[in-house]
Image 1 (tube, rainbow over the protein chains, first blue to last red):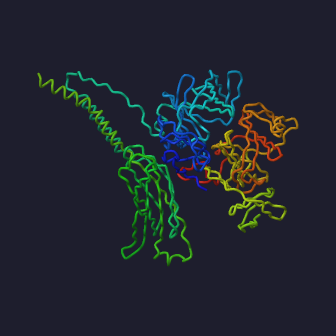
Image 2 (cartoon, helix red, strand yellow; image 1 turned 45 degrees about the vertical axis):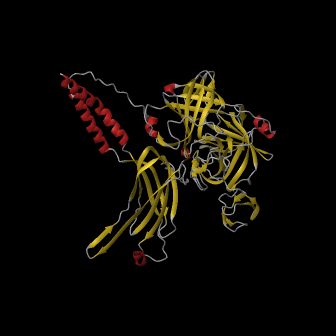
Amino acid sequence: MNDSPRALSCPNCGAPIVVRAVGNTVTVVCGNCGSSLDATDPDLTILKQSIAAGARSRIPLGTRGFLAGIEWEAIGFLERSGGGGSWQETLLFNPWEGYRFLVDDGETWRLGTPLDRLPTEAGAIATLGGDRFTRTEGYQAQVDFVVGEFYWRVAVGETVDVCDYEGPREASLSREANAAEVAWTRLEPQADGVVESAFGIAPVAPQRSAGLDDARAPTFNTIVAGIATFLLLAVLMLAPWGVTVLDTTVVVIPDGPAAAAKFGPVALDRRRSGVAVRGSADLENAWVELDFALVNRATQERYEASATAEHYRGRDSDGEWTEGDRRPDVTFAALPRGSYDLVVEATAHVWPARQSWEQPAAASEPPIPVPVTVTRNATFWGVLWLALIVIWAIPMTQWFFWYQRNNDE
Amino acid sequence: MTADCPSCGAPIAFRSAGLPIVVCDFCRSTVMRRGPDLELIGVSARVPDTITPLQIGARGSFEGRAFELIGRVRWQWRDDDGLVGGAWSEWLALFADGSTGWLAEAMGRYTMMTGIEPLPDDDIVRRVGAGETIRPDMLVELADASYRTIDARTAEAVGSEGELPFAAPAGETLFGVDLADAGGGRASVQKHGDVVTAWHGSAVTLRALQPRGLRRLDGWRQPGWAA
């Protein structure tokens, strides 16, 4: 059985299509041309020709993030409107937890959980798990834009009757009904910055105002900038080098066939990212040859490197000796932005010379698990330079004007 | 009890004493038990690839009763326009006392149900038997409990595996009405052939089932509670 994301291509425009929730997904909308495709058909029959793909989720599809300890992958994105407003919804998936919705109305992110139990309704009050929710005026909501994959047949223009119920602590319930079914969702507001940091998306930059009309020498501002620079460099030195973007394991049988596996996605959202791939193996007098390739899903460009995890121990006239690196890593200096698959090929060998006298020939070596991690460089060089420019812009400008003014006098 | 598949000779295991059907893991023959004899009655379709942490042999506990998953039927339903509207898996759970239940898995949500005896005047049972149209959000009574209808659909089998109470060749159809109450309770009335059965149980999270022996999933970190 195979549960890896399924890589296909759009029958309309040829762009790569990834189906991540294999078996659940019924509709997938091409991110390139906007065609709506039937994911239950191996040929991805076109249900609706392109509806120009335009808007984008603030969370790029394929991005993963942890919310309340659960890892979610953004797999679908909807823009909807109704009741005098519009909002965006990102569909999140986790194989053990199912689906959630992240609803973004431009001010607050709310996390929506499809309800397993129905609220009890009495008049305008719905009660759920001891909380009381008050019904507000109903409206019709329609889908204005859609991209990604969904477990229902979603289409632009489709409408549902929505009724929101407001509850305690800004929580709410939403009842959505069409002719075939009624679906209830519980929405919980997320604290400022929680969603942004979970999915690694940029918050809105704060504004700065400059005071250029100060005739005194800008010594104070210069000291502040100096301290800020020092703190910035200190944080950079103390911060971890990388962010783990993939953590997986390959199992390889010593002197057996090569183990090959594909993992992903490895999402690189910067223009250029430094990436380190590390394979480690807890072995003795054995070696594991590792071939790594990072394959860009969109362009199929491959970036390859090899490493050997090895460790030997022995005894000679000088006494005990050991050598080898159990945790070798390879680095890719500057990979372009994109969603990548990591392809790992591994072969393992046991030092034959030792095996022959220490172990019976027929005994087979146990399989070796090789944990593989992919880390992406966390140092924001672009942001670092920008920060330095922002920090020094005011004192440098002030010094410039101060120097000019003093010269004039 | 184990036996040899009458078609390919591969070993087939019967974990339950009471179930008549087993699908050979190797050649996919559907084998029926008649007393000591094994009879070939057809071939089952393979269950299509589906991202799921469940697998045959996985164990768990429902309302304090230990179970093991021993069989699966994958069902799908079609929209009015004939397109596949969705699919779900019904995993057959064998409880320690020898009884069975179905763990339904649809879009990452789970429901465990066991068979119940409906009351003679349960209108919903009569209506399902008569093939009447059933709308969502109707109030119905079943075995002395009140529910609302969630959906009513005809489903077709697309694949099956393991031990089962009935053969589910591809294309086999089943009409089912899903019911829910305010307490997370679930029920279902199903018509399979001419037989109408009633089921009840509850919506559960995978975590609450304390699962053991789950499949690992490529590219995903298994949560700490799953093993």
